[in-house]
Image (tube, rainbow over all chains, first blue to last red):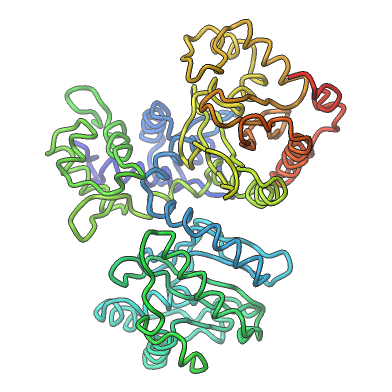
Length: 267
Length: 267
């Protein structure tokens, strides 16, 4: 009932429509929308009308189609991303104030890290993360934090994927990566220099929830060569514990949390 | 093709499914989800499967259904709410730091104000707004700011609606409300004491975009009786102009912006 002759579900076509919009092009004329979504104009015409009735899409003064606030509202209520973000935001502000560096918060989404919040320092370096933007798991310190704490079979799948060399410094060799992941588990943080852009380094720690599950990666982005700023890792670890607590969980005793302090010098 | 025998569109049923989740119940067993959405279990079963394929919904360890991060991502890219929020957030932080009071940002959505951001002061009063929460237009100072700047026919519709008395102080009389709206236009801000909860007052200013259009209301929430704190309104007006500029627009000269300064004492 819900499928077109080509076997696509209505849900799939709706997702393709909604995904055609971006920060660069938040409003699209109907025909352009059809092209971007790769759907017939007649289908788009009908679906847009249905989505307008529900308030998920709307027309601007020039009749271009854009997202309605209702879509954002629907997605935000009961959203884990929104709840995580709300718990983390005040702590991220403190981290920005005391480190003077960009701060970001990401969740694992398939083979990418999806960034759900970022706070930009005026004084610091290039920060290519953006809210609702993605980076590949092997191209950011937060991604490697997720992989370090992932179940063994997920790690194996990751290590056997063909990984793109994004800069000279991107680690793509499976054995070398295995070593990185072990060091991250051991030290409680991940510091990677210039693996996605040459100019900056990311230092990430896991945010733990119930049963030691990693729900997010908290990252400070510093100019290349400043990864060893002595205060960053302790500040990140303090912030991670504060966020865990704000999520309603009790942070593990530092000694139990994968011996996070004793081996900081190793990575 | 996309409609059920009862004439509802698939889009409508998907929206009912997604809207069944809340911050209180972010994960629902399938049968409960069907009840909340008022849809047959078989329909919900099929739609959830389709939404899972797209990543909009997912199952947790207990097989309960919950929002997937992909839904939040879809809604955030190209979202006016997300862009507004991102432009406003640093300015709202400054306002929180310098006023010591709760700060919120709302957009007009039908007959409600939908709150897209809030920053809570530890020291201040009751703040009932929440992110992705709503308040009725006549029950919040931000709503009255929107109405004050709305086209005449929208104002008339608003003034002729039956408005609920939410507290002793809620203004519901059309003639009295007409006076409030005129004063808001005249003074450039709206200060309402205890109109939604007895303990607190809201003071709001419009955020202007292109062509003098009001895109958001910026609010400071203070304890009842402290509406007249002398710095609040100038701080709010500074913040509003800063946000307008961060949205890429040039704020109007103060003299042109509805004579915003000369008659502050009036409301």
